[in-house]
Image (cartoon, rainbow, N blue to C red; front, top):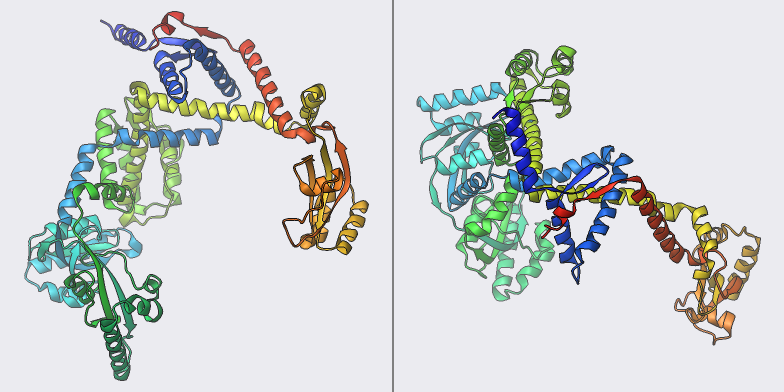
Length: 638
């Protein structure tokens, strides 16, 4: 069979599987889409809607969508951006590699079952950016240690981690989940005494020495009282601080209920004092060593002896110990962490997606073009001259990739997808690689979204529903809702033509209701209202008198407002609910037995006018756009 024959057979098979049920203005609606919306509509109804009734409603729905398309609603930048975002969000579960994610989760959980002593030498990246020079220096220090130099000595001389360099690089025991992924994985798996390769993290390059391991102790929640002792404190000040914490310890020993009150009003840790001295739960490595050790040594409810740290003297009360979390409990938290671009596993997940989708969609990078860009970047770095040199016709005419054997993207689109930052030559190759990975990820996920549209009915139906629903909303705003609320002349004409539809069962009073603090202010307002123009009378009066009075236009039915009933219908006098304004009057009141203008019944008229516009619009659509229903296919709808 020829290639054409094969394609024709596939098309016939697909058509037989999902035949066209309806064609609206030349656009086919497959049976699956109709069934999806019909069943969804039925589930939302108290009583199921007969199929024939739904068909008519569906026709009108699709006619409105056709009108939105003819007006180019789908071509606006805002609409296209919104749809692209929705497609990405909806495709996310399909893009996820559950096996890969579960392996990352399991790895993180397995690490969390222990605590590890983190020992390292760190060299910072310049401004947090990768640097080959700094990496080379870290690698030379590593080789020197392997050749026999003492790790502690090298740490003291070279490490830029000020908190650990004078302790032989020892950061103490750490719990998992609080360190950069590459560092943490190395620290928790490196055998005791062994030296690691150079490990890169977002802040620098590290040489790790394997430390001790112990089972995870979980977390504790404590409250504390701090008497701060600055490093520059004199001996007398230190003695006074110790005496103060001892006196507090005695008070608490005699009356444990005093702990939280003292913490709230006298602790020097003002951040925790607001909560009675309570700190968030913490595990190993999250607090300085003496505080950590004392907290874990206590029993729930027990208060420590005074504890000295670099910050001063503490009194610690342990509130609660929690066992290490189970895998089931940790999983949602870990997945959320992996979804943070700051976590290194975020990039691992992206690389995994790129590899899978590259294989699926037969993606190929234009290596000749990319290698030329790479060579230029490694000589002169990334700057405006670099970007300009690769945006000439000789380069923009070439496809940067092929996906599913189709050319995709060029250098202009590639550079538009990233920040055009200036990057020196020693970091340019890495940055260009990151740019390329981002571009591949974006184009491959777009290709996968197209594949999902063609092959996954659930995805396709949801995307189409959102697409058509957004079009329907926008075109309805234009043709009905905005027009009904903003077309003053049309609204007035509709009211005049249909006055008989708007009747009242009781008289209404229209006027300006004024409430004032006394008779003199009321008289002043009445005189001023007589001088103001009718169009802006209320606004002007409010601006002039401010909070001296309450001034508002009213149109109220008899019996609805006691003050109006007193003034116009002889009802008893009332005491206003706002005691500030004891005097009230109506300015220029009139009693109406029926509406005299559209503003008297604007809400009702606007609603009816909308219905009229909607009806006229539907009739226009029926005459304008052809609709064909395949009755044979309709009979097969489930």
